[in-house]
Length: 282
Image (cartoon, rainbow, N blue to C red; front, top):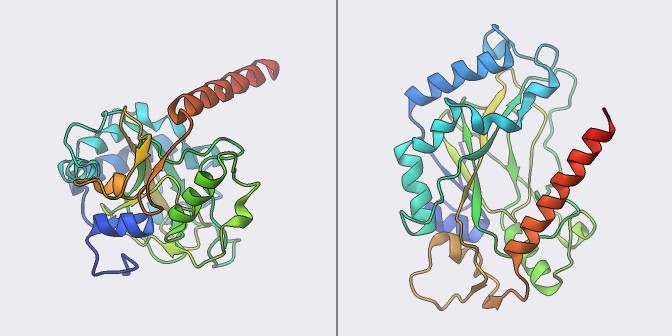
């Protein structure tokens, strides 16, 4: 199983260079067993996982955004090896704000889709401002063993540097309006065993895929955030954390705008719009 573009790199250096890194066996089997029992309860399907299909797993149960309130699943953040990895990324045991922000993804077998990977990625800032820096990173925890074309997440190595450069040059740059600025390249498929973790940059292109294998993709899609946002970076600064170094690949830069305020204001207004739309639809 291929776990990196360059096996010679330490996983944190791989994250800096390519915008993602896979670390094997970070999550304990005891937690995995409890989490899978909880997933079965949430989905409400008593069949073995390899008998789950798009025909017997309701679509709303394939993406559970309020999973962060689940007392079992939220304990993923208490896993000692995962917490150590988060601290290593941030370069401090005190940087992570301990907010447990995650979603449950269940991607069951779909017998009607071709055995191909989605050819184009995306970033999670759709028709919105895109922050050059931000306050954290993403990671995805696999609760099951997976095979190729198994509905796994794919990432496009190095695209975090390309997207960041675009936003540095043009603060109004957006996805998908300006996505043609990012050259087409080959995706890298996350092929985990249960307990493996994919760490990835908020600006790296990524995407989900249809599940062509009997075993569904069952994963926790998580964030690790700091309260403090970066506002500038200088690659010459000694002792930069791996997370900070991932923003320094395009050289020294100071953002001309308050990215934290811009993003918080945007998400607050988007939430307000969603609430008004929901009220109007009643």
